[in-house]
Image (cartoon, rainbow, N blue to C red; front, side, top):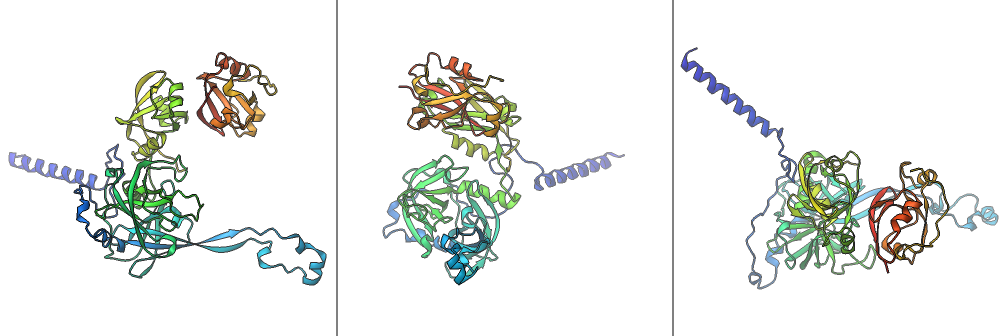
Length: 507
C-alpha cells in the first residue's frame, strides 16, 4: 500500500469513528451522572436565566406593563370525573310496615341499596409554557378526571390530553391541539429572595381571571409532607384562593417563577386566603415536566433511609452542638444507603459539599439527582464527622424473652411516667403487622397527658433503644433506664414498621 493510499485510509477511518461518536451522543446513549435534570428537554420553552435587576421606580402607574403580556398565557381548567357513591343509610321509617303497606317496596332514589355513579366537577388554573399547547398545572386539578377542558382568556375552548402527572410534587402536564399560543418565559426560582415582589394569577372561585400582588415571605418551605411528598415551596402573601391552583406566580419581569398549589386557611377546604400561600418552584416543575414528556414518569434518585428533623433537644441528645441536618431513623436493607455503610442514628450534615438544613430539604435534593450518580455525604456519628459516598439507586414507584404482663411504674424515670410496657411477643408483633424478628418492649397503654405522649409516643409503639442502648426485653429496658432519673431520654421507636427517634423531656 502506497503512502498516499495509507493516508487516505486513515483519514476515512477517523472520519467514520467521529461520525459514530457523534451519533452515539445524539442518540443519548451517554448520560453524565450527577445531573439534576435527566435527559434533554422535549418541550421547547423560553427561559430567562440571567435577568437584569428591575427598579420599582419603573412602575409609576402600577404594574399593568408586567401583567398585560402575562394574562393571556394563564388558562382556566375544568375537569370532570365519575365517582361511585355508596348507598345512603335508609331511615328506619322506610322499613315500617305501615309505610310498606301504602308505598310498597319502591324507595326514593337517594336510598337505593345499589351503588350509583355521579359526576364531580373541578375548577383550576394552568399556565401555557409552549406555543404548541403544553400546559403546566397541579396534579390535584386533574387527578382521576375523565374529561379535561381548557378555556383561554380569549374565550376559546379546547379538550386537553393529560400527558402525565406526578402526585409526589403535585405537577401535571396537559396538551391541547393548538399553535402560536401566548406563553410565559420561565424564570429561575433559585434566585428568589424573601421580600421580592410577586404576582399570583389564576381563576379563584371560578369567577374569572384575576391577579393579586404580594411578596415572597419564605423560600424552601416544607410542611413535613402535609401537602406533597417533595416540598420546597415558595411562600407568599399574594392572595391565593380556591381555583388558583395550577396558576402562575410571576416576578416583576413577568417571568414564571412558580406554580400556585396550596393555601393555609382556617376555614377548611372552602376557606379563602389568609396571607399564607404556597407555590411549586418553577425549576422543580420544569424538571418534572421534562421527565414526564421524555420518560412518561419522573425518575428520582433513591438513598433508602427514613429520616427526620434534628431539633435542638435531639441534637443535644446525640452530642451535636447545633440543630439542622437529617437524622437517620432506619436504613432499608440492601439499599444504596445500606451498601455504603450508613447507619441508624447517623446525622447527615452535608450533601455534595452543601449543608443539609433539614430532612425535607435532603429528600428534595436526593430526588433531583440521577440514579447511578454518586452522592457525597458528611455524617455525624458517635461524636465524629465521617465522609461517605453513596451510589444512588432509582426511587421505587412503589430475642426470645419470657412473656410477662404489663410493667408497673415503680422505678420508672420521670420522662416515661404514664407509659406501660411489656415484652414484645410473636403474637403481639403479628397483630401489629411487624416482622417476627422485631424485638423490644411494646407500649400497652400511655397517659395522654404524659410527657411521652406529648413527644409523640403512642400505644402499640415498640421501644427498641433507650439512650442508644439496644432493648430486647423488659430487663434490658430497665437496665437502660438506670440512672436517667429526671433527665431526658432518647428512644428509638418502631412505629407501624418505621423506626424513628424521639426525645422525651425530663422534669
